[in-house]
Length: 345
Image 1 (cartoon, rainbow, N blue to C red):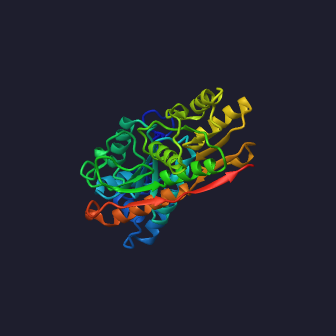
Image 2 (image 1 turned 30 degrees about the vertical axis):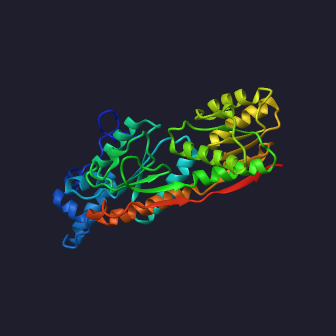
Image 3 (image 1 turned 45 degrees about the vertical axis):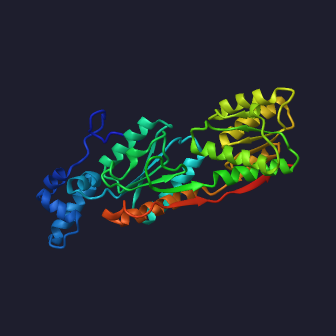
């Protein structure tokens, strides 16, 4: 999580932020009186209240609610969201959906990015727990997630999004990765594109593995077996996807279509298709802007990424409301459905 040091803190050259004692000194009252005014204590004399509020406005004093809640041992009024790649539009939509539900409940969302690094995830989670967030939504990195168990987090509830937990039980919101990939691949095959290559994430990623499984299942249902040499399970961004697509398509026995496991890989494949001027149909997970203007047939697996965030936030709020019983009860899993959309001729 990125943060900017407050004015007057180490690393800042600006003036110190006003404190409650500054307000009390200027208003000629005690710090306790200032605190009572800010709490809207009706026992404070109206004249004194107005004088204190005028100084608060004049100095621009703002109470540090996080520090105050930490001192009092209260929840922070915040929930954490930890994602793996903010460059992927899916996670920004997920965050917007979660934020919508959080704001309706009077909570704030704190966002952190792990860049798929398990150690970075541990650091972010520890930081969020130290800030006493009410709960967390996590898109997990790494192979084991025992450090995200309620016992490890002092009872802080966690909901997993996009990828399921490993080694622990927890509420989870997934996308229908298998079903969407199978339907999109099946549509390519039904259109006569009988040689379909695969460009996808490394098999260690749950989403990449499930989408590859859907790709393979569609072939089996059509009585076909995909060629292993048409499969590339390593691309992770536009550049690596373009290089992998060039390798697959710039050969005499090139496939006539490609299935891609996310929108950035689809865009990388599109660049290769344009460079080669090849008659290649594309299909990929994740809809994206201007997919209908690429000039080649494109089939996309579409779903509501905001809904992934909304469902995760609702599950988390339910656990938060359970209080000390949040870790009890059976873990719940919900799956956001997909639809297949065809662009181009």
